[in-house]
Image (cartoon, rainbow, N blue to C red; front, top):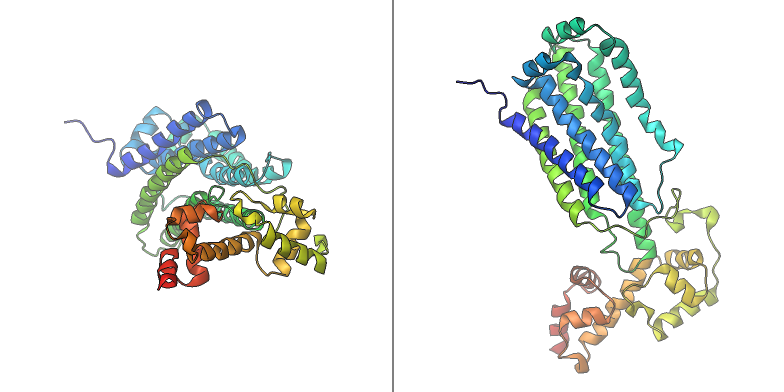
Length: 389
């Protein structure tokens, strides 16, 4: 009877690598829009494919011996994926949230750890004779390996964790940009990306914990169950990669990103605040009451500013500071008031809820119901029933 090469845990690692490689190829050959975004996501997936292969070669019960028979040069080569996937995810996130994003020299600073690790491996492993490398791998023992490599691994996973946090900061900035510039944000939001980045960042944090437990066991002799935790991380990673593929296939390119890397919410940009006057407030209030621009579902800050013949920043500042809300809240508060009027109007008694929703400028039933209940304490249907009593 032949020996078993792969167990269930190994198969999960192989499936993770396989789906990453397959989807990366699809991104590079099929999808044409958002070329830079697709390339960055494809490269991220390829680096993520390298990570389970590195785990399989380094820690697979049977496959480690097979890899050693093929060549000791296979060891560590896939480990470079750890150092590259975090910058690639950050760049991919930025390519989604910024208009006309392009890599700059400043972005290359995130590659310094990769090149430092590459130099170390070239000097202390790949520069050795073939026989010496094979001897190192044959006698490898985690508990006898140089302790400084454990600290390098902790730094590596902390580095990945921090860059995941930076991705979340970029997404949060983009969400603020939407709230301050659009009245309809459902199709522009990157909620799926936020959830996935949170997932990957959590996995990286988990990896930091696993390596810390390894350090306790190897360096300080404190017994820990890091094997089980490592396996759990592999399974969750497989699920996250599957989610990334599913959501990315259904995602449509975001055309209205943040204009500059330094853009912030207007109320925090003290130096750039535009002055507004009492007549500006009166003009805005009159325009909203008489022209009802909020009935246009695609209304943006820029469009409204053009109608009022005001600079967009002045209008934004006025809404933020005088009305104490952002553009999204400001416009949708008018829509809710209009919906309340229609729901109590006898002439609209036969109108269904979807028609009223569209009439007042909403495109999403979920958003309409959520904002209406937040404003009135009841759903639109409940409001209509109460008004009819």
